[in-house]
Length: 300
Image 1: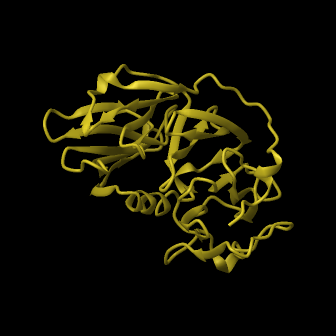
Image 2: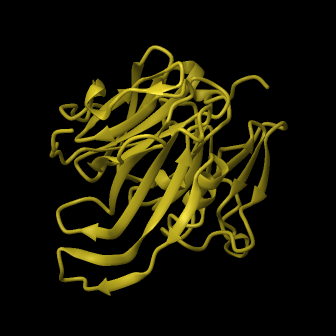
C-alpha cells in the first residue's frame, strides 16, 4: 500500500444486523461530517456537518443502523457537550442529554429499543434537555459500574469486544512527555485482534495502538495488519480504521479514503488488490438542514 498523507481522519461503525455503517469524517479538527454507507453497493449519503468535535469512539450505531448514539462538544453554551440520538446521516437530535464536560459521555445500544448512557446520575446528567422527550418504547439504563467517567474508555473497548475483537495486549506506558512529538508512548502497544467472522482460522485483523496524541497528527497512533493462516503478515501501516464488513471483506480507512479488499469464496485477495471505494479528503463544510423524517423518531 502506498503511504497516504491527509489531515482528514475517518472512523466508521458498522451496523450489526444490516449492511450499512456510519462514517465520521473529521477535518479540519473542529469540523465533522456524518456519512451513511451502504456496504452492499458502496454508495454513500453525506449528511450534516458539526462545527465542533464528535468523540466517535464513544458513539454507537443501533443494530439495524437506523439510529446513532453520539457524544459531541462545541464548547459553547447552552450545553458545552452532550449525548444525543439522531437518524444518520443527520445529527439533528431526536433526544439530547446535556453533559457539560468531556468526561464520559456517549454509550451503547443494547438493542434497538434500549441504550446504556455513559452519564453520571448524581450531577443530573441523565436529565433530558428542555424540549426533548423519549418515545415510550426507548429505554435508558446507565453504562457500567461507574457511568460518566473515563474518556474513550471503557465505551470504545467494550464496543470492540462486543463486535468480535479480542484483547491481545493491554499495553503499557513507556513514556509521557507533553512536549514530545508523541505525548504518550506505549511499549508494549495495545493490541486487538478480530478473526474473520466466516473464516476465523484462515484470516485475522490486528489493530495496534502504539501511542496517543501525536503533535500535528492523530490522537491514536494506529496500525493494522492482516494475519493469514498461510502466508506472511501484510501490514496496512498507519491507518485510521479497519474492520471486517458484513459481507466478509476487509474495509479500512487511510488518508481520507475508504478501501475494500474482497474476500470471495473464503479467499482474501492480496493487499495490493485493495480498491478505493470513496475519497472524502476534499470535502468542505456546508450547512444542511435535516429533512422531516430525520427530525422524527422512526416507528418501533
